[in-house]
Length: 75
Image (cartoon, rainbow, N blue to C red):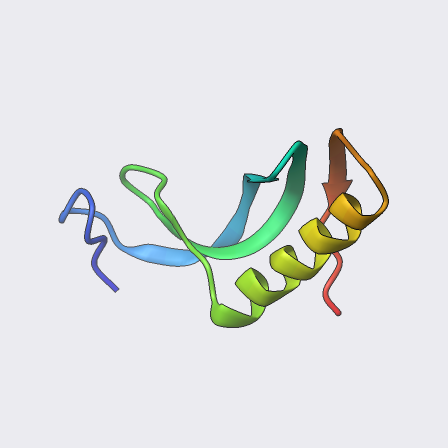
């Protein structure tokens, strides 16, 4: 697909890093599967990846994590 941000690049399967926050919890997740623009690097996540990130964040918040870095693991 053509990137909606830069309007010049094409997206291809790749990986990205996401930092997400809920309350006082900050979770950085590496190796998140995404469609990544070959021009500007914008990453587009699937609904499944977003759902998994939300699960990971909820678990980290429940555990009382303040800041943590994790690798993405599909459910």
